Image 1 (cartoon, rainbow, N blue to C red):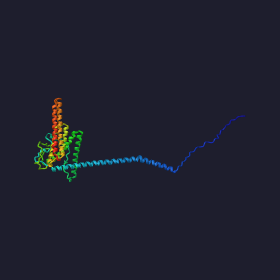
Image 2: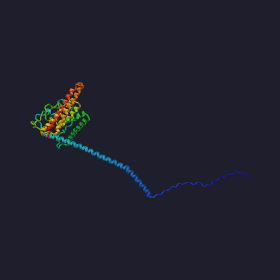
Image 3: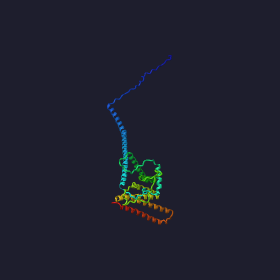
Image 4: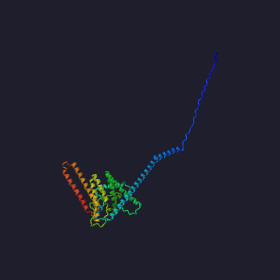
Length: 368
C-alpha cells in the first residue's frame, strides 16, 4: 500500500465553560426589628450626650455661678462692713470730741508753752522729720478728723472727712502690723504721723487765737512743754477744760506710749524717757480733769494710767540692767560686780513698789 501525506484535525467535543454572572440578593426583615435598632441607637446617643456631656457641663456652670454669688456676697459685705466701721469710728470720734468740749474745765493759770506734748531735747529731731515730710507732701487742704458731724455738710466735706479718717485707720493698722513684724522704723514713722495728726487741731486753734508771723509759715514748728504743768484744782475750774484744744487726748498718750516702747526696744533711752514721761503727764491731766468734773475716776482711766506707769518702770528696769551688764563686761571683774547686783535688786524693788503704789492710789480714787 502506498502511503500519502495526510493531516489529522482533532476536535474537542467538550462543552465550553459557562460564564459566571454576579447576582445581587436582598434580605428582607420585619419592620419591628428596624424600629428596635433605631430606638436603641437613639437611646445610646441621648445617654452619651446627657450623661457624658450635659451633666458635667451643667455641673461646672452651676459651680461657677455659686462661686460668683459667694464672691460677690463676701466682697459686698467687706465693703459695707468697712463703711459701717468707718462711720462708727467717725461717730465715736465726734461724740468724744463733743463730750470733752462740754464737760472739761480749764484753769486760768495755763501756760501757753505747756500745750504741746514733747520737751526741748526732742524738738530738733521732730522738727527735722516733720519738715522733710511736709516738703515731700502734696499741698492739700487740711481736714479735721475730730470735728463734729452736724449732718448739714456738703458731699465734698463728707468725702474729705472719709478720706482723712480712712488714712488715719490705715496708718494705725500699718503701725500695728509693722510693730508685730519687727519693722520698728516703719512703726515709729506711722505712730509719729498719727501723733502729729492729733496735735494738728491744737496747732490750728492756737495759731488762730494768737497769730504769729514766722519766716516760713509752711514749716512745722514744735513748741515743747515746759516744767510748769497744768494745775487743775477746785479753785480754778471756772472755764471749761477743753483737752482737745490743749492738744491732749488719751489717743495721743497711747501714741506716745507706743513710740516710747519702740525707742526702748532700740535702746534709745533718752527719747524713751521723754515719751514715757509725756504720756504719763497727759494721762494724769485727763484723769485729774475727769475727777474734778465727775468727782470720781473710772476703772478704764485708772488702768490706762497704771499701765503707763508700769511700762515706764519696766523700761527703767531694763535700762538699769543694760548699764549693769555693760559695766560688768567692760569695767568690772566677775567678783567685783556683786555689790552692783544688790543695788540692782534694790532699784528693781523700789520701781515695783512705786508702780504698785500708783495702781493702789488710782484704784482708791475709783468710784465703786
